[in-house]
Length: 87
Image (cartoon, rainbow, N blue to C red):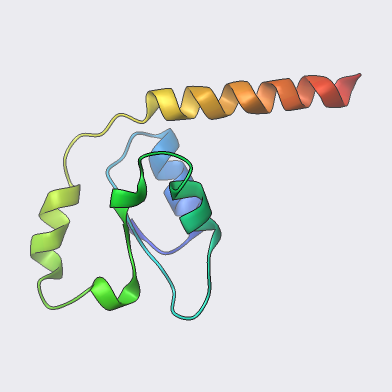
């Protein structure tokens, strides 16, 4: 998956799909915040980093991934948040 949209990155993580997120010029995005939460920064490129060798770069990202521990950690944190809201 190649994406510049937050939800595409989220679904890629949840579904354990290889992805490469590309930023948008001139603004900080939710994607950079999400990927900075864990060791996911390697799946992010600034627009200036995308060049003529993009097809070769993609080969580095299209291998099996496992984000299960990241997803489980975030679900657990959200679960405790929901429990606090129900009180």
